[in-house]
Length: 111
Length: 120
Image: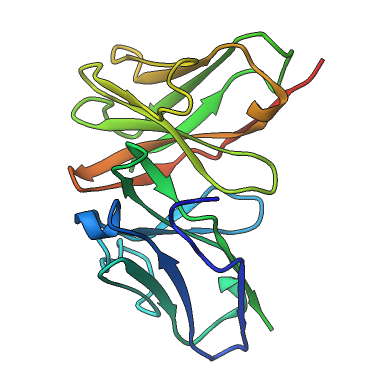
């Protein structure tokens, strides 16, 4: 059980908007640590999608956006495409564990 | 751009020691931090630890007693050693660049990963 809680799965039809939540606590987001998001396509290594709560690395489409408020963060994907079907992970630092931690991951299914 | 490649044995016996190496190409290993992260089959990601180019390290407390990360700047490589392996250590092991500043550190890019199976 991770200290960053994500829903196990979300789904949406092509073209729709989906959001993936990442619930933290006072020992991570509430302590001022940023959230970062990764996309892991089947059989591949994770790829950085969002860093510093809301910043996109070069090459990441603007269909992907991140936000954080208090002890919760979320990743939004608009204009859903079949190629977005993947596992998504949030990541931050937790002071109670003294470790960089990941959420449990959310599997996105494009219907 | 920076690329990373893990290398090491795919099969290790229980109670033995695992040694993995990450080779960095397309850029210098200096002036960066580097990390190891693992993912058991079908499960989520677990941060193992990091090392700076000067050799400073930090480890996940859950693994600290069994893990060592070292760096060889002359070879542009860093390594992971895990002692006393059990089946629970079976995972894909990834190396990655650890980037950012205190309070906001992320991992990018990642190596392709190497599957390590602990079995007799």
